[in-house]
Length: 262
View 1 (tube, one colour):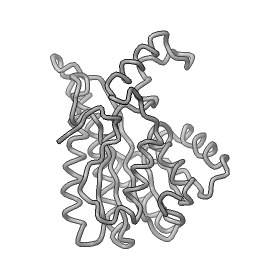
View 2 (spheres, rainbow, N blue to C red):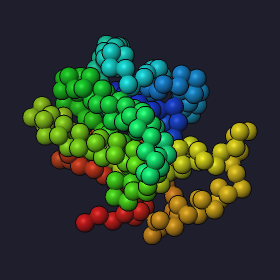
View 3 (cartoon, one colour):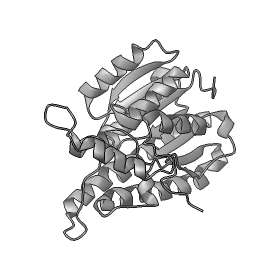
View 4 (cartoon, helix red, strand yellow):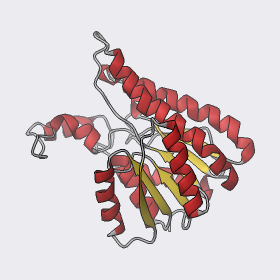
């Protein structure tokens, strides 16, 4: 057993695919009770069925959720706490990416990215606070490796995640007196549907250029690797566990050396 999170109730947004789904699977494997939330009910149901079919020690439950709807966030978290006797940790993984041309900024697209990535995270943090205080729990927000090495089309995405990191820092200071730890995780290139989006054909297969793009992603790492969702998930599990009892207000970077900050 790596980290003891067995029996804990973990609420994860953006859990229908990619990193969020990977986090849900690892927590379930470690014996946690996971509530996986996502806007896409069909994809979420498929993912929850898949994970529960693996015969892991923990269980995963589905909750359809639009993180931009503050009232819905309140209702869902209240229901989760009532059904499971409380919430021990919340992981904000929900997010979207829209390419933005810095020379012709689409302000509506920027607002949409901020609405989901920042305000959605803010809604969940606000609603989760009292539940986490009651259990002296943990909050983990997903950021991005683009914080340290942004690319022009990431304008809105990186800005939204920078706001999430500052939210994380200030909430760590505010909630520390209540025993709640708040941290962020900024992944490098992880093989998920998000980075495959421009190379996925209508029939679901990958384009001929995908392997070239994957090699480009590998080239950013001195290890010459692209990460998997589990690489991020184990970092999150550590931050939620008691082994991280002295860690708060930090941004962890599982990025394969994509950046090596001072």
